[in-house]
Image (cartoon, rainbow over all chains, first blue to last red; front, side):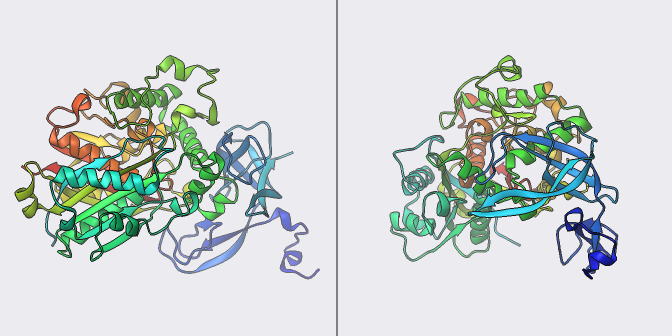
Length: 125
Length: 392
């Protein structure tokens, strides 16, 4: 009830994706690192990415890996308003470059018998 | 700083499907061929490096270099396995180079090997996909999917069209027809590859189709490296390893500042050219890492041969054809010679050695004196570049 998310006014954990913001240059990555690839900075701040992003490129993959159920699997690279780019699964039949997407939560794949959940991207409406 | 190093022997197995041969058979066959080609005795070898990526998972075998040393009964020399994803072959060559250049030994054997056929395709795809960043792997990203998204960006930014991708395949398949070692020796036409409903060319990851992707192959390739001073006493035409470069890049491909630039290749080739004291303009023939058709185009730019965004035009103008100004992948490349992943980086240098010696038969690039190759690990997140030159 009194989690940090509550104080931020957020009720759905699934709506939030964590990022690491370099204090040196402001670049945000979803990957945690000790040195910033852009400026060499070593201090990072945890931030949350906004829900909205835009599709930069995509593919419908027909030769999927072991443990992936969707055929084809639609993968895309999205960009958030702050410039952060993320690769993820797109849960939409219709896909086009430039389309607006929102974060969603779901089963990504099975690895060594374990179900892996994480962020996906769904159309705005 | 270092001694100059030359290639004095090379050999390879045919690439393709080798159901009747073990991993040991393959690496022994190419190694013996290289030893015979150099005209040395196996007892002259002072170190062995074996490049391989997948044997632990696919063939239930590790310590390949030890098995190769046992085949040659070389028990008193250093033997190492080198694993660096799809750049394992290139990394093995670089390590052998360092061993000889430092004076640790005078002659080194380097062999790259892989046996991928006969394993389930989705398993191999998954193992290759482990080269992507864990954050992308969990999403189901595979190398073909990364290449497909890269291709779409390339098309948007530089006006590359599907027909350009097909031209790479047509050219490399045509070259492979002249290479008896190639996995796929079958001509393909632009019309066949551009047809939307060709059942032989299904979509793998749009916009990429089957013929945009290299095959999975079995095979091995070997080189004998020697100090140039000694090499001149042993063979007539030593081929000098004039430059080596290696660099890496953010493995999260989408985070790269310009995701259409293969920055690790830029860095590695600049290092190699600087060490060789030549420029890309001096190169007569190149073997590039065309695991996907788009990569040959992108690499021809980032290695420094063409301005960014114009590689597809050079291809279209047949500059990179076998009889063009800068023939690329005379062997057929990964696309048609095949891609036994751990062997590829070595096989590229075997082909270039034959080219520089003038022994490449029907696919010989006339008068080739300087050559370039690049071997990519992951989606160009770890890249090796080599410059070879005739020693005379």
